[in-house]
Image 1 (cartoon, rainbow, N blue to C red):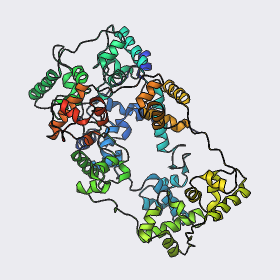
Image 2: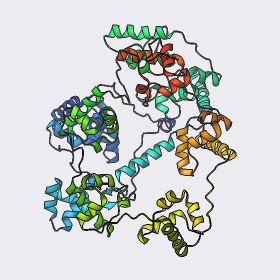
Image 3: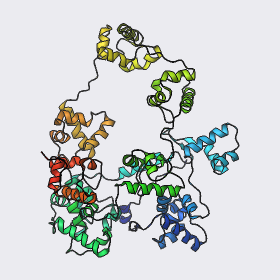
Image 4: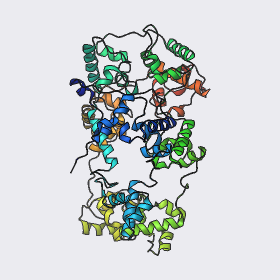
Length: 637
């Protein structure tokens, strides 16, 4: 069986060691949009005489097919043509782009997901429907129907797989894990070693601009990534670039200008250009004027500097205003030819946010669609009395018995929960009556009946039976529930004692201070640095450690930082300085036309600190507003 290896980016460092050049292709943001992609498809068709194949615009896919020469024209004339990934970003799929361009080979995206198509094909085939008819119903080829009938479930049990041993979700997860394993985790010592190694190779210390990552990467850093950490990583570990240089005992370049001088330079360049300057515009500035590094050093990021100068952002990542979200919804609806559904927006892309952002801004997914002028793709409440009863019948066939209300406390996908059943039918008993089921009568047991149930359980399970063992069989035996017994007698062991049964010693749950300190130090060794509360909680879930709130309460009197210090570790402080925070607050006030409120800064935003970080530094939100020279909303104490 052929193994499917995940595609990965070229290892630039390895390639450079063999003297193999690695192509770096990038274009300025805004070069491509949906309309320009369609124009490029038409231009190619006029020149070549036929529409391009997807692999002809993707050298990596052409190599995978053994047709590396097929993408030669694309590579030679780049950036005249967009890449296949760019086409998919604006139109969803390659064939959808061809359809939008009116070229042969285009087709609209499937209305049903792969899982739904496979299950529909199998269901119709089992009912005696011919493959040709199934193909017509599903709008696929007859050979594709055969693939659906031969499909197998992935090992994850969630999705069908038609080609290869894994579904696309598992393949993406595995690729992410491989990428994460290859990406080094930078601690302070690793960053210091990288700074010194760069200095030896380049014969001069690196600048913050030279280590910019992402779409702004260039030079040696871009060629040899991930050999070097990015500027953002350095700033997060040391608080600032100069602090990292000082820790590495390298020459520190003093700030040659003030915040006001950097802001004046940005505004002057904006007046000269007639638009907001971009990073590319500032790469060619001379050494005597503020550059990109000055903006990043003074304000934390390029976009933060633009905000402080009151300029419009040219490329804003992770920040979605209601207007931008509505535009993205309308653009996606135009591309698909229909209203997008929530599941299609489960993950954010560069051109749109995820569904959670829409719900946060507008209250619900359908509310966002209505504001965008689109028809809701589903009713707010999809459950009717008839659909609830049909779902209960379906669950009865699946379980092979009459379901209980506990089966629907957290129902599987496609089934209503108990609250929906009560809302539509009045009660669980009413639902049972309509279906002809035996409705369980709610019986309030006496104290003696509960104690007798415990004694009977002891005869059947042994005197030292566990709480969970009782819960597993109580419903089938018609005994009072374990929760009802605990509520009646105050605790499980109190009920056992009154029933004349031995008290079961509870599991040891309390961690001593020494155990917590050892665990914190072990987490620091495992993570390569001081753990944040969220890092600890991820480890705790796998290693059965106590929650970070428990650690903070027992070691730090409620503070995670004090707990870290108690373990002899160095807390990771915020990378935001007071000057940066006040500059960002002033810029936000300028944009809003009023001082920002505390709740407006609670959401996570990589370009600015949270309100919690602001209060930790200034003591209160009003104190930060006063420091920024703004009015407070209520008199400060």
